[in-house]
Image 1 (tube, rainbow, N blue to C red):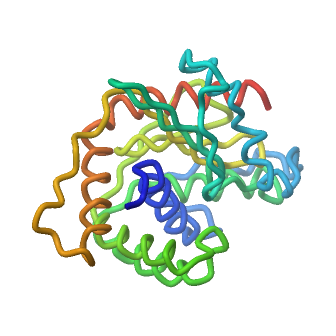
Image 2 (image 1 turned 90 degrees about the vertical axis):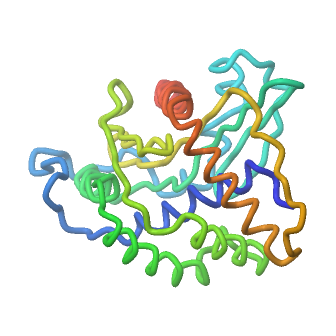
Image 3 (image 1 turned 180 degrees about the vertical axis):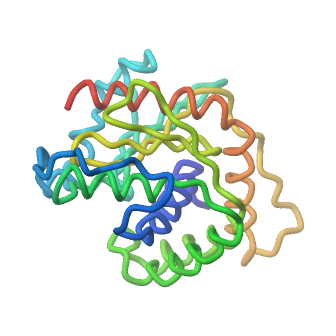
Length: 245
């Protein structure tokens, strides 16, 4: 059975895949970009250094946990997890992208963080389903199958974003607590949660072929229930990452 942190990472990746389908043209509600620079502070190779952007030291200092107690996982970016008898910590950074200029980054960010209706999300999810087959982060059939199952579990619900103050040039968070960040020409997504463990998953009577889908749906439901804490922790971690750029 996939680890809960892997399920959440797959969920975030799917949202990122949907965001990749956003138009390159500025849409209503996106930040005006005419006054922004056409320079590029960050090089495209930065995406290869996810664990350099999100280090164990940053995570440890942010959530008061010794860095050497964190478990690092390079899954579609970089993740650090930790747990004791009562609490769990799940953090991650993904969808790191250095755009050709600050202007193009702002356009992408405005479109990717635009609140969307259920109908619009359905269209985005259909595009994401096609991208699953060619996404390098999903490099095995098992990962692709997990992503497809997560698409079904996520469904085509509406997505709403709100602004996050004091993070980079601009930052927004969705209702599940994922924080989208732009710093000059760099964009990335951050997730974080420190709190109670998810309740035990009851798989009694569930067909073995459906276990992964049930687990994914349960993980998505838990993420939704703990969204307020995830929003707070995600913003806190995003600020810490930006401070070290």
